[in-house]
Length: 233
Image 1 (cartoon, rainbow, N blue to C red):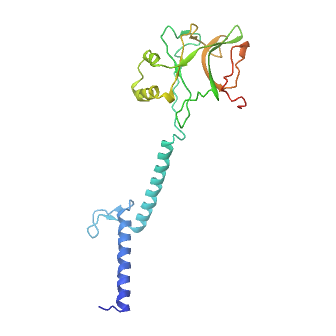
Image 2: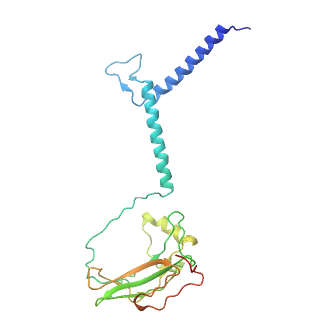
Image 3: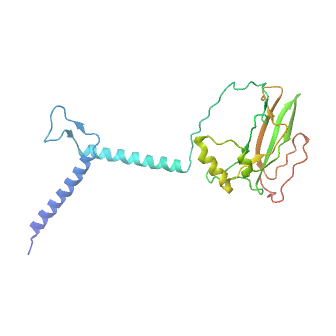
């Protein structure tokens, strides 16, 4: 069967028209700006859909999709988190003395990397200082508090975590790479006042470079771990 050039040209034009009709039909189908026809219909259609509306709809959908992917990536990477802070004022008066031992207060702490959730306690780089810090008779003072890595026995003495964070706390306890530190029994475990008072006392947990020597207020009991990198800035 032979086909002349005129027949091939007609078939190409017909194919081009079919493809153009399919594209136009697709754009009209995704047109989210189509307006309803009031009180009547046009060729059985109740909306007027256009190619221009379809193109605009496609652009809008692509923008929303791109924005959603970017925000999802930020969420997965914990980028720029929203932190809620609630302050309950006047819960305790500045002069109120709170003995933490009398209320069976338990405390555990750690400092973790923001992205990897790994505890920062490598003695080659950092060390913790836990202390009672205060002021009395215009003289500042500190008293170091001993601490140790939390054990199962320590956790058994803690209250059950709140339901909203129960899974996070349990996962933290079970992961050896996210182990926390617990404060030893300490007699002078009382807090009161703040810097506005002539006398105050608080509990401080400080993370410092491993080569830092705590000599505040004449303290001489601090030392540098042999594993510490001495030239660390």
